[in-house]
Length: 261
Image 1: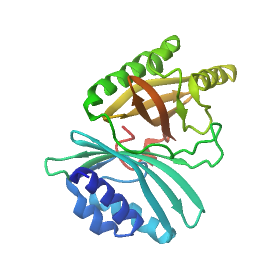
Image 2 (image 1 turned 90 degrees about the vertical axis):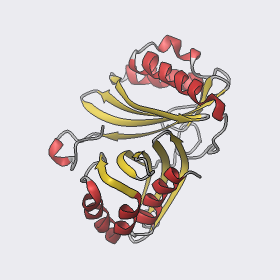
Image 3 (image 1 turned 30 degrees about the vertical axis):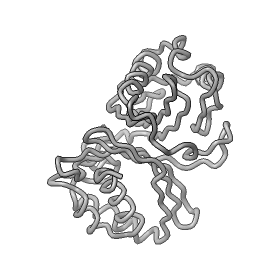
Image 4 (image 1 turned 180 degrees about the horizontal axis):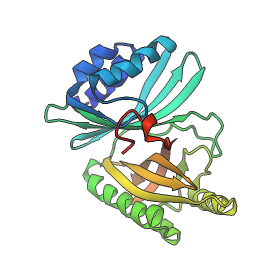
C-alpha cells in the first residue's frame, strides 16, 4: 500500500471511525486542506468543527474502506459506513489530492444512503476489489473517457456496445439491472417517466489498472447532482459499474465551502 493511500485511509479510519478527529486531520493533511464535502469548511478547523459533533452523535461507527486506488497525485476510496448499529448506513466515494509529501490537500466526495434491495441482487459495494492489469491503466482510462464523452455527455447511446461488454456487465446501482439490456432499460424507463438526465461535465477522471473512476456534474430535471462512477474494465470493455450519487444543495450558503467541484 502506498503512503498516499495509507494517508487517505488514516484520515477516514483514525479520524472518523476511531474518533481521533483533530489528531488525524493534523497528521494526514498538508499546508492547506481545501474541502468540497457539503457542510464541511476548509482546513483543519473546518474538519474538526464538523466531525467532533458527529462523533458525539454517533458513538458506534463501523466504517470500512472497500476499494482504494491511486493515480499520480490522486487517491480514491470507496467506503461503507454502518452508523449506530444500523441506524444509518451509507456508501461514500472520496477523491483526495495530495502534495509532494503525499499529504492530503483537497477532498471531494459523494454520500448516498445504502439500499439493501437492488434490482441486480448485487450490493452497492460488493464485487472485486483487487487492482489488476496495471500495464493497461492508460488504455482503460482512455476507454472510459471516450465512453463518458460520447455516451454520458454526448448522448450517443447507440454507441454503448463499443464500450460496455455484451457478455457481462455487473451492475451495482440499486435501480439498474445487469447487462447492456439493463442499461438500455434504465435509459428507456427514465425517458418514459419524463425524467431528463444529462451528464454536464466530467470534472475528474482517474484510474489504476482495471479500475477507472469519474467525478461528474449531472443535471436531472431541475436539480444538479454530483456523481462518482466506478468502472471495472477487462479486455478492453467495461464489465462492472458502481456509483455514488448526491444531490447538490441549491443554496450556496448551505455548502460550507466553495462547492462540490
